[in-house]
Length: 467
Image 1 (cartoon, one colour):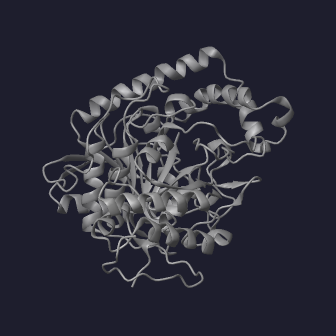
Image 2 (cartoon, helix red, strand yellow):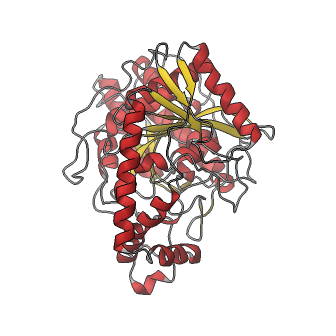
């Protein structure tokens, strides 16, 4: 006896084929789980229960006819509230935005809809994706699934909490400087930032070509399955990579034997808490046991924060253009102060930063000519308390270089809170990151939180008549 809310997307589809569960069963179970946990954890900003149930019934009929639209037909999914979903407002975590339903899907929402996924609603985000905590005046505080006194970080905190708690197996999030990987790390789930352009985006993001769209899931295979649907070019995003792409599940079980992997404990500039460093080193050693050649080496670049600080000027200008002067006062005071500070950078400083960014990207391409993957910690310290920010100096460099990177759970610290490893691949080698993450997942499977909640309806996974 189990709840469909605890099943992966891959497992749900297997049940749909066997007619031991239906999309309606799964959607009802997930909606019940959301309803039971929302007050405590606050993962969702808006839930479209009526629309989701209608989509689930349509998917159930398709499966009954043996005509599913895709490998995720009838699977519950949600999108972060920075991405447009037709018929729902995009509030971006801010009181300064309008509560007006969108007339057009983002590319990610459109592809989920075309594939028959059940769109549950929108997950909570930090305001404008700017801050590293999912706590806003608009939507309130989102809490960590392992400890309600702790933060799920940001800006994709709602998506990571939803994945961890079984509030929809497929979560679409965004990462402009760690916003997929850090929340995934502190919530104990898998977060994948694909190569830039792999998943098209529209409208353009405030932080331009630092902005990646990708999956947060419980299982690596689900992330590959979701990427199959999201990938490919879109005419609205001139930077999107050509489609239709590949099936990212192919080669997922090939392991890491024979790969040459670099491990950098500090990237040459970060200070890491001893417990974090020790547990990450243990996880890295698993790759040696699995047959990879692992070398401890720094990739050879300086702390890129000065580059990011200067490029924030572009982000600040775009944000100010989006919000009218009358509504600007509704933006969080810390963000307004950060925007003012970022706006002081001169054009010459931004150009200098872009040159430094180019040198960083070229240097890492040369580094990956020797190494198939780079492993690092995700966080320099433990999971932050509510109101605090995670220390994550390892993540933003790979937005600057647009490389694929993932956060993979590796166990728990002495306080029982999640730990994670970052896996970074060469440009466009998303397959290597997914493959290595799956190898580690297979060697060291991780549990998921079991929050206290009202009793759910249990489902016996047995043959059932199609409706």
